[in-house]
Structures are given as structure tokens and as C-alpha cells.
Image 1 (tube, helix red, strand yellow):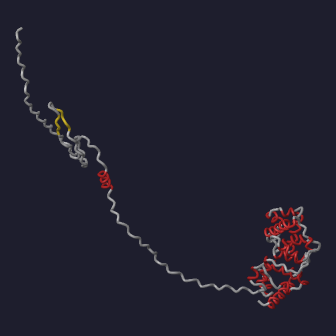
Image 2: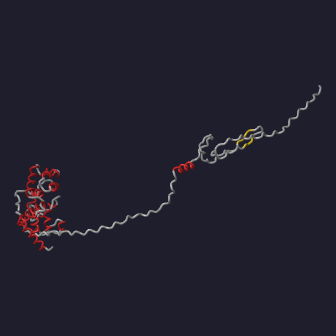
Image 3: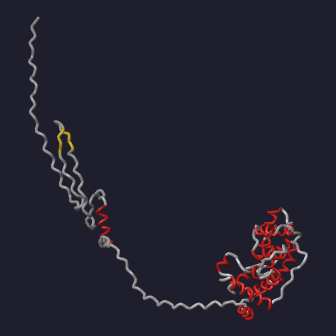
Length: 347
């Protein structure tokens, strides 16, 4: 955007706001700090609401130090008539806190006699001071040439193409002080502020829209409705191919399952067979043969092999009486020879 085009748009905006609004005179006798606190209340609010909120602050608290130590919630309750009480309370508290930390007091009246550039630098260092509060304080208390720009004013400058989106993101509004003379600065700032607040609080008003159009605001082009994409054909569900595991053997019937378990379990010791109609028990594993036991005899001991125990699986039959072993043959024993009688000799 050329400087000539920007200047023409600013002049057109000045002409329109001057046509519909009257400037509000700045009250006399206020100190620098009072102008600063009043600007915190005036930002994005009407003059009547800012006057009421400022006077309530002065009446509700003993001094500005008490306002500094008050919570944001309590300050917002005092400033309830403003469009955004919480934002105004934060601005008031932060600026008072920053001044106190810098000077350990609230006496900043010496800035009037200070070099204007140095005073502006000191104000810019305050934490929480906005572009609007800074411009209003410079213009009304220090006698400098500055146009206060708030967020609502910046929206009008963007709509009238005086400021680009990139410049607005940086908080810059070049060309205002150069195009508007210092003698017209208070008038332009007051009327523009009233117009911006009305646009903020009454965005759908037909009169406000007509004033914006007269000031050169460009209506945003309606967004073209993009054709909706055709619905995609639903694909058949993809079935994942899983590697087949080794086929499991069919589970046996419960009856056979129990039989196999019984066969796998070790057989219990065989009980003596009893005459009953119960079915024969399953065959038990063979038991190891017992070593042959030795039986004593007259001539000595002779080993006799006992028959191995038959499986208990078959029904027990009456055991035949074991055959007695034949007695060992008697060996012929020689009788000792009888002692022969010895003849005694006569004495």
C-alpha cells in the first residue's frame, strides 16, 4: 500500500467519524497517574462507563497502594459496568504494581518536566501497559502527539485497509500521526474511539454497517461453498489371512477322556479278589519278580524259588496247594567204632 493511498483513507475515515460523533473534552487537573488509570478503564469502553468506573475506584479505596494490593476479582466487581471488567482490572493492577516496583511510590508527576522521549521510554517499560493506555497518557498528560489505538480501533483500520494484517499482528498503525495534525489529534482520537466502541458493542447495527461502508470498509467476499466430495464406495471388509496352525486333534468324548487318564495313572496295589458281579478291573502293569527266598532245612539252607505273582487284572482263581518239596535224602553216617576194652595187667 502506497503512502498516498494510506493517507487518503485516513483522511476519509477522519471525515466520517467527525460527521457522526463529537469529541469529548479531557477533564482538567488530573495527574499523570490518574490519566494512566483512567485510560485503563476507557480502553474498549464508552466515556460514560469509564468515568463511572474511575470515580468508583477513587471512592472505594483509600489510596492507589490499596488498589495495587487488591485482587483482580475484587477490582472486577468494582469495575462491573465496563464491557470487560476483568481485563480492565488486570491493566490497573499491573500498571500500579510496575510503577511501585520501579519507583517505590506512585509519584510520576515529574515526567511532565522530563524530556518527552525519556518519559515515553520509562512508560513503555511498565509491565502491562497497552498501546492505547500509552498513547492516551502521552497525548493527554505529556502533551505529545500520539493516536491511541485499541483492539476495537485496530479492527476498523483493518476493515478500511489502512493497516494490513501483518502490521496489525505487530501492533503497528503507521501513518496516523503523520497524516493527522497535532491540533486535530484529540478530536480524531475521541471520535474514532467512540466509533470503534459502537462497532464492538453493536456489530449488527445497520447504521454502523452504513458508516463503515462510507468510511471505505470493504466487505469480505462471501466464501464459496466447496463441492462436497462424492461418497466413497464402501470397500468390502478386508479379511486378514492368518497362517494356519497345526490342526488340533478332535477332542475325545468325556467318557474316553476319563479312561485314558485312568490308564495313564499308576495302578493301585491289587486287592484280594472278592466274589462280586463287578466287571473286571483294567490290566495293571506287571510287578517285578521277587528274589527266591531261602528255606531252612536239617542239613542246611536251600533256596526255593517261589512262583511269580500273576497279574491281578484277571479274576483271582483258587490257588492250588503248593507241592511240598521232597525231603532231602539222608546221608549214611558212619558210626564211630566202639572202643575196644583194654586189659589191665595184674599187679
